[in-house]
Length: 129
Length: 129
DNA sequence: CCTGAACGCGTACATTTGTACTCCGGTCAA
DNA sequence: TTGACCGGAGTACAAATGTACGCGTTCAGG
Image (cartoon, rainbow over all chains, first blue to last red; front, side, top):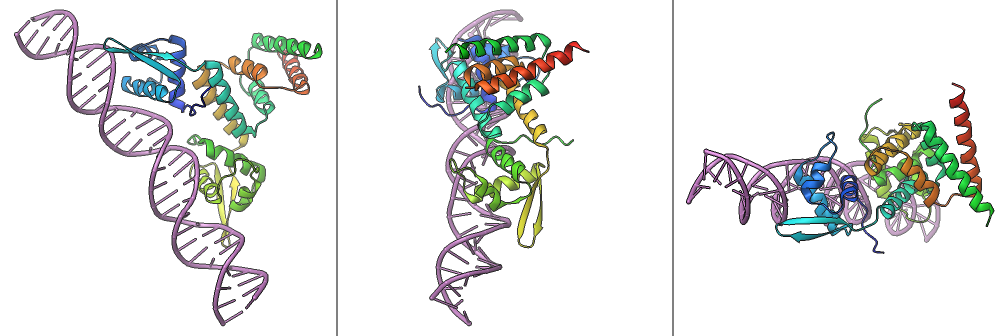
């Protein structure tokens, strides 16, 4: 697995759009943007190009149009990004972030119970090893 | 509360160092760095200066030496940063990040049970409202 | 009293990031 | 057939970021 340069903030939102729409043309990505905080067509295009040079996407020319496809797996990127954040903001420990998420960000009851089940399942796995 | 410009990655690690040592001189912060990934004294200094212009820190000149103090509260910055990440990487929903943290990052059994208790406590609070 | 190591300051600078303007080829209606 | 238009490519550029060099000052040892 190549060690790709980290994604910048802007690249990240385009990357996410790309994951949800792979493969896609620049315009498709551009159109897929939620109405708020839109970015210019050319801006999207630049990000896509940079995503490709950084190794996160690949593209083929289909006729006149370039089709981009996500290359790096979303999960891997998420992991890298979160690891990065955790290390920079919390010196590497995960718990403070967890606590923050659970306490500060509004989590619905349904989500809470999903979380609880997730944890219980994991604890079960642990103890049976 | 002033709306401060976001912290860059480098600034963030220095900010964290500052929170843990406020108030401190540049050298103290520099020395407080963990041995791995050290940054140059001048680099730390620059970050501190930028932290101040961005409004995250303040400083006074004590004789020849400048003493920096954290100004913004850590919790607020963490919240802003995490909100930012969640919105860019997950389009605003918290759960994917939670799941990722629990499943992908190694969480010890102790931590798991702490989490479980945290959640149970919250659920209790919820139901009693 | 002189000198070099340690200090802290400010300035500097190459890269990366965010954002967009311009130019080009093909379409399609008048 | 032609000019208004759309989609796309590439280039451009200011601002933010990461990183550090050089300069004046102190202070302890020679």
